[in-house]
Image (tube, rainbow, N blue to C red; front, top):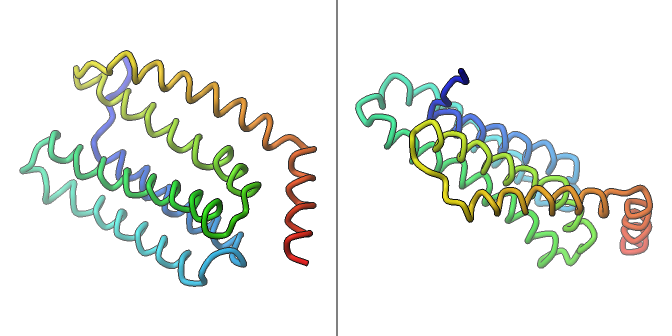
Length: 168
């Protein structure tokens, strides 16, 4: 029998996503403001502090309320991932990098998050709507296709060539 997820798992997932964003913005430091990785690290520290406090002091609220504030923290981290994608596409006008970011970061993190939320709702006895299950499968197919297309060696060479031309 599989173990049930605790609501704090979503806060832990959100913390990990903020740490991932911090590392990725450090790697792409010439494309982002210098303070952005530190802001993401502070957000991850806030999530870690939330994990330390919630287990001991917020047991009064019960699982329902604990789920919602942990889920909200996860949504904030996912929103930041999508915002970085929009930043590449709209502000920096780097469409190739936005495509790579969506295939390598945005779709996989959203897909994993939807999977864990559906797993949590299944064990809580809340039926996961059929259209969301279909959307999860469609998102997995789109993600696999986009990763195969946009992260192929030819596409990456083309993206690097375009990036070098833009920087000149």
